[in-house]
Every structure is written in structure tokens, then in C-alpha cells.
Length: 519
Image (cartoon, rainbow, N blue to C red; front, side, top):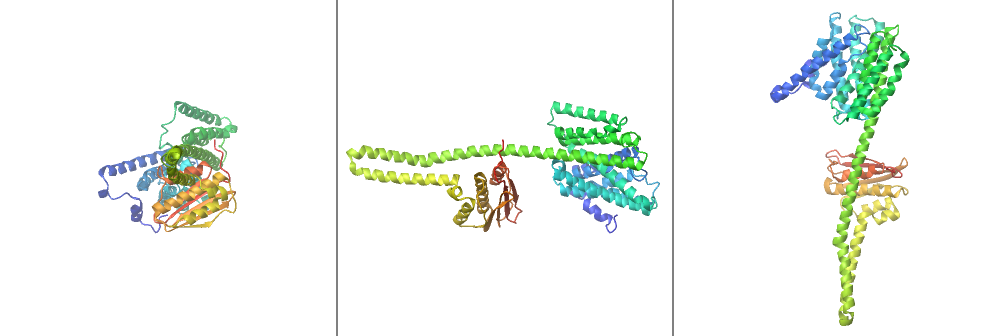
């Protein structure tokens, strides 16, 4: 209900900016969006009324709620007045008490606003179907929003005398499941197909056509044999695995459409003598089919995204390795190689002058010794940059302590070190995570203190570096942090970077006990 909240407050919270601040084109676009939303909402409501099967106050499936949530999620909450107008045009108030009509209207509008608001919080990037967590969040938002409508609407009907007290639980359940089923059909379909799959090949298009043909055949067969009802699930699995979110949402919509059509015609596997049982069975069938297909499609999307990131990471690692080899070649050519060449020249001069001017030989040898000493120092420094000796001989803990000792400003404090040794590759990765994080904090963050922890955890290694700098660190292309993520993920680890502006930076790398043997 809307008690305690004025219409003016709602308008200020969700309406667009005043027209004087909006360019004319944007204002026109907003008005056109409202018109489109109203037409879509009312059209979906007419479909619901045509399929009305549960009774005058609840439907077997209510599609407008999915239309409203999808439109507000993609277009913005500012379009909520379109939902209100759509509800007023769609609902039939002739048989309802005034209070019941107002309650039903408020519930229908609130469910869309609440579900959309929650969805923007759990999936702010407008792609909840791309991961399992997003799908779960979307299901929670749908469940909470539709529960608001079912509660407000059914209670208002009870208070208005439209239903008796003993009918309240059944009406609430049918209302809630009907609205949730409508959202599960329309919302994922709209989110998935808001971006058309332009990359689909002709083969993928033909596969989609075959999928729809199989679903249509199964749908037609349902009226003759209820034993075929759940043969749709292998087809849904096929759609999710092969066609991703686009195929899964389309398959769910088609399968649900056939199930609803058969039930409302009192045929098919969900047509029982009791209307209540028929409605409940159909709604649960839609819910189970949608949740199963969407979760499987999200798993596929997550694996594909990981594969793409891994391929890009490998490409960057290969390029970084090539750059590093070129740098080492350049350093060797310009430094140690030149020194060693000078040593060779000095020794040759000493050999030639040993007979003619023996007195000059000591000077040549002394110069050669100096050049050789400098060459050794340069090679040692170069080798230290590639792999610190203390890390190889004494392990990660000693290497981190040596790093902290050699760091003058800012202060680096090693708060915890692992008790024993782990895989050499894992130790090297952990060392360079700390080294890069400390370097970034010193050069870019303006940190006064840096804390380092490295502990054995759950059979692996957990490394944490935190500083009190300015924060705001990002993984820009070619940045050191992106390189760290590539290095960590290449051995099967994970990297978390928490760097709010003005709040310091915290980098946590979780590494396996042994690196993954990636193909």
C-alpha cells in the first residue's frame, strides 16, 4: 500500500528531470517511450485476459509484469508512470469495490517498481543472465516484487468483500505464481534479445529453427499424451548449451506458451478436474523450466567469458614475454656485452704488448679487471631483476623480508609469512604480486605504509598487500595490475583489487598449491 508516501514524493523520486533541463529530443523520446510502454503493457494484459483460467481476480500467467520490469530496467525507473497508465487501462474495475480497485492498482505498480529497483541493485550492469549470481538475483527480485502485488492485491480484495477469508491463501498463491511466471517468461526474453545475436552463423540460425520445430512438435503432442510433458527438458538443455541465453529464453517462452494454451483448453498433461490443481501444475512447470534453462545458460555464459578472458590473458602474457626477452637482449647488448668486449680488447692489447712494451701490460690488465667487475655487477643486477636469488634458495618468506628490509620509503611491514615452502612457480607468482603492488603504492598511490601478508590457506597460498595511499587504482590496458591478473589467473589463481578513491588499495591473490596445467 502507499500509506505514508505522497504522490508528489513518488513523482520526485522516479520522474524524469524537469523539461526545462532536458533537450527537446530527449523529452520527445521519453514521451514516446511512455506511449510504447503503455501499449505493450495493455497488449500483454489482453493476452492474459484471453488466457484467463484461474478466475476473475487472478490469472494463470500475467505477462504485463514482465513487460513493465523489462522496460523500466532497460529504460530507467523514470518510465514508471507508463506502468501506472497501463494498469489503469488494462484492469477491469467494474466488478470491484473502489478500495479494492485502488489497492489492486497500487500493488500492480509497486511490484514493477520494487522488482526493477532490486534488479538494478543485484545486476547493475544490465546483464543478469551472464552469470549464475545474476540469475539468482533476478529470481529474488521477481519473487519479492510479485509478492508485493499478491499481498496488496489479495488483502485489498478481502477488505473490499470480493473474496472470503478462507480464499485468501489460494488467491495469494495463484496471484503470486501467475505474476512470477509472467515475469519469468517475458523478462529474460527481453533482456536476452535486447541485443540481437548478430554474430550468429547460418548454421546457428538453422539450429534455432530446428529447436523451435522440435518444441512445436512436442507442444502439439502434449494434447494426446501427458507422458511427453517432460521431454521438453532435454530440448531446453540443448538450447542453453548450444544457443546460450538467446536460445534458452526463446525455448522457455515457446514451451510455456504451449503448456498454457493446452491447459486453458483443458487438454494436455496439466489439465485436471480441479482448476486450482491445473493452474498450480502449469505455473510450477513454467517456473522449473525457466529456472533450469536460465541457470544452465548462465553457467555456459560464465565459462565462455572465462575462456575469452583466458585467451586474451595468454595473448598478453606471450606479448609480455616477448617484450621482456627483447629488453633483456637490449640490456645485455648495451651493457654487459660491451663490457666483456672491452675486456677482450684489453687482454688482446696486453698480449701484443707483452713483448714490445711489457711495462704497459699491468695498466691494460687493471683496466680489463675493472671492466670485468662492472660486467659482473651488471649481470648480477640483471639476474636479480629476473629472479631474486633469496627466493630460490630460502623461499617466499625470506624473499619478502629481504624486500621489506631494502625498502626505505614508504615502510613495508611483513605481517605474516607462510610456515613452509610451496611450489616454485606459485612462490614466484606471489613474490611478483607483492613486488608490483609495492611498486605501485610507492610510485602512484603516495602511500605512507604498506602491509604484506602471505599465509597458507585451504591447501593454497593467500597473499594480501594493503596500503594507505590515495586509492583509485584501475586495471587499464597494459597496466601493471592487468599484468598481475594475467600472471595469477595463468596458474589457476584469483585476484581481487579493492581500491576506492581516497581509501587506500588492497590487493588479494589466492593461489593454488600447485599451478594448473593449462593446455
